[in-house]
Image 1 (spheres, rainbow, N blue to C red):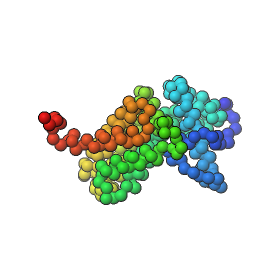
Image 2 (image 1 turned 45 degrees about the vertical axis):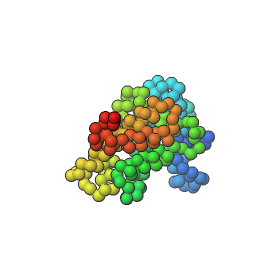
Image 3 (image 1 turned 90 degrees about the vertical axis):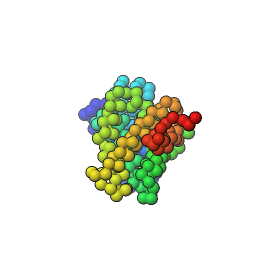
Image 4 (image 1 turned 135 degrees about the vertical axis):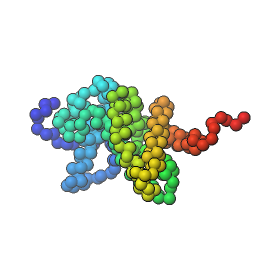
Length: 239
């Protein structure tokens, strides 16, 4: 499709599944709300097409032109939503972080930090799983984890993104506990531990094959449940 062509109407096929973790029933809304719904539909259509092509051809062998041809829009339209293929994939990490931080901030203040983290992790996984997804199909976000792990370029980019945004989690933890992260090391320490547990849970989920979000949450809980036993006392089993 020629980049000089007139701007296309930003409509996405209604039959495409909504892969956005922020999806929700918008209904037929007038004015700005309707325009935002149509933009979200097109963004979802681009993501859906990209994931289908990445799965069939591989991330490195898929071009932006192929993605836009599948959705029947211009490359110029693609770049209004994403800076690159990498940015499209990393959008799942950005959405995941935003949803998780929102879930953590919403947990009851009486919950201790680790308990709040565990519950927020499970809450965010549920929110990122589109309604109506077949039980034996992994949510798109979990499929993206496999893709990131299989691509050195995407893995490096995802680690860079996590490193650049770890202060956000530290800030939410500190605010919940009403401490100053500049003088109290605990929020930063727990944020680092959370990152390590998430990495291990992601890897264990990937190794399990087609397991769904409940398996991911169970892996996270299993690692989090071993923290006390790991840091306190010896590991040698009782004879």
